[in-house]
Each structure stands twice: as structure tokens, then as C-alpha cells.
Image (cartoon, rainbow, N blue to C red; front, side, top):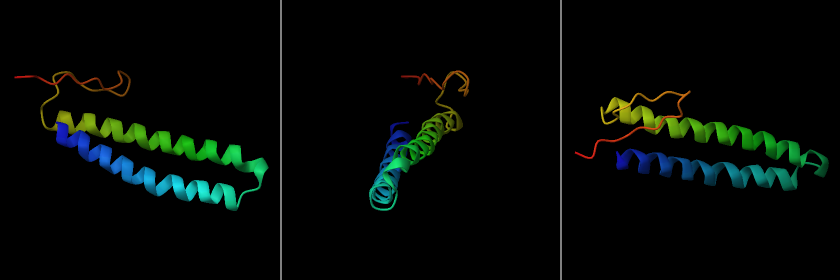
Length: 85
């Protein structure tokens, strides 16, 4: 279980270092000031969608490895309880 979370964390961190410097460079060097807030809001929406996907990916990996004792659902928010035994 921890190795799944570490993998997802590192993948998310790598994506963060790829997306945000490029997005902010485009924001400050190309866009006119009146469009910057809308642009950053759109990028942030996409980024939060990606992070939500990555978070639920950990849950699906736990279910696939049969370590999750409660079913994970998008409605419930995926709070898996891992057996300590």
C-alpha cells in the first residue's frame, strides 16, 4: 500500500513540475493582464481534476490488491481502511 501512494505522489509531483512552470511562463509572458485570472482558473480546474483522478487511482490500486476492507466509491470519497494484520 505505501508503495502505491509513493508512486502516485511522485507522478503527481513530476506532473506539477511540468505543468505549472510552463503554465505560469505562458501566463506572464504571453497573456494580456485582463485574461490572466481566467487562464489560471482554467488551468487550476484542470489541475484539480488531475489530482482527484490520481487520488482515486490509489484507492483503485488498493481495491485491486485486495487490501481495502470497504468498497471505495466516488460518492463516498474513497476512504479505504487497510487491515493492520
